[in-house]
Length: 124
Image 1: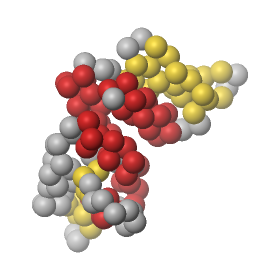
Image 2: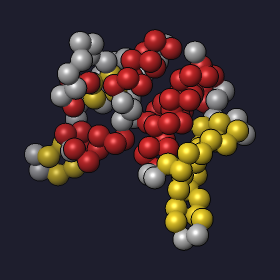
Image 3: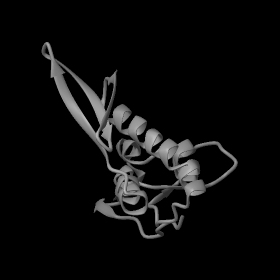
């Protein structure tokens, strides 16, 4: 995975990529390693070292949206996350190739990560 060297600026001296809030937009280190093993080699804005992840291997951390697109293009696998309401409570589920997976994920991001994990599992 190639890492882009030029940061995107929001305003002043703050960069879009150094914002802690943005960490949830990127895959986890473990997912990045598994994706690299599957052949993911797209440019990434961040590496595991940028988030102070203390692992031996420095890998590019792609955005989750990059990963979903990559699975669509490379493996023809489509993963979608949906929010459902039951008794005025919300939970999230995800669908891959028409199969629904639900474990009452409490946040969209947790369901999104679980969906990416399953896509990796299927592609292996």
